[in-house]
Length: 166
Image (cartoon, rainbow, N blue to C red; front, side, top):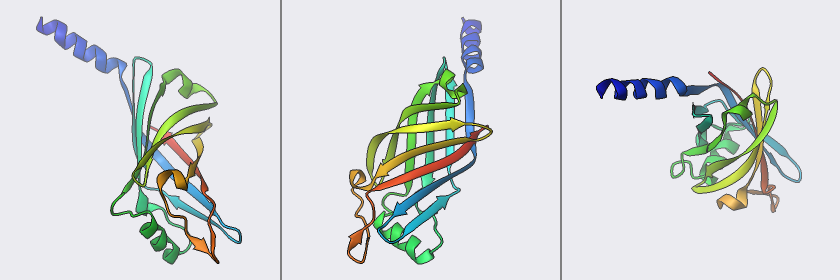
């Protein structure tokens, strides 16, 4: 009996594949009537485990790690996003392992941002690196949109990212 249990444990681990995110960064673009602002984070952490042809993943990004070219703007963003109360942006999901070999694929990922979870359709393009894209609606996450000259920034914020799994 002990040999059977040991065999099952070793066998299940042999079918399991674990990956960690490497060389990852995420970009956002905020648009306003008179200005476009881009920011970036290189502090993405993530893991993916594939077992029995299904892969589960989780990616986390410290909210305060996004920086633009203006530190004053970044501090304002951190205040609006309440980074102490909501320190992480996470993306998690499950997909078929076979899809990872495709050049382009789409899947639904559950994004937790500013205390609100919402499912987004995420597009991935595989090349030497993987590139992804989705669009966050700030209103869906109860984010108060800052204004400049009484005009609020766009509600939709494109998120682009690149990464490798190792």
